[in-house]
Length: 141
Image (cartoon, rainbow, N blue to C red; front, side, top):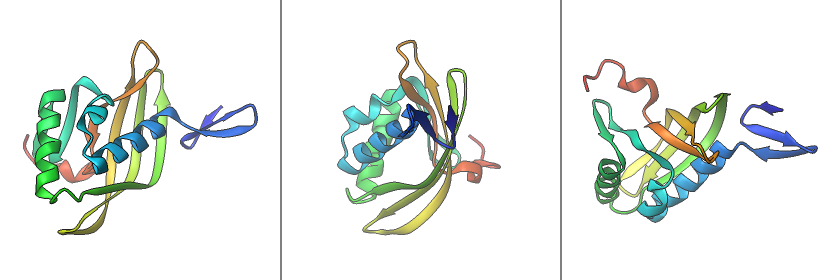
């Protein structure tokens, strides 16, 4: 049985595997461990850098995260304050309250939208990383 971002297995509540991937990604972003981070993305993933500016593919995403780290003076902090996972087959839509802060940036909560795809090995990988959510509407890409 799956419900509200968690699974109940043998009476125990377990986080959905997508939530575990998001936690791993957040930790990798904070640690600037870009190798680990890129292993969470599909090869053709899209990262919304800012509304109107996307990185497509792992190499572009790596360059974007390296630039983001510098922009935030190597102090970017990311955490989730709430997640909902809607799964259908090999696709999962994630709606999240993503908290972003840094030494030179006040804490804000973004209404993020992520899409994960389950690969042939059963591993959930991020195919769309949009921490801006609906804020991207109206920005040409």
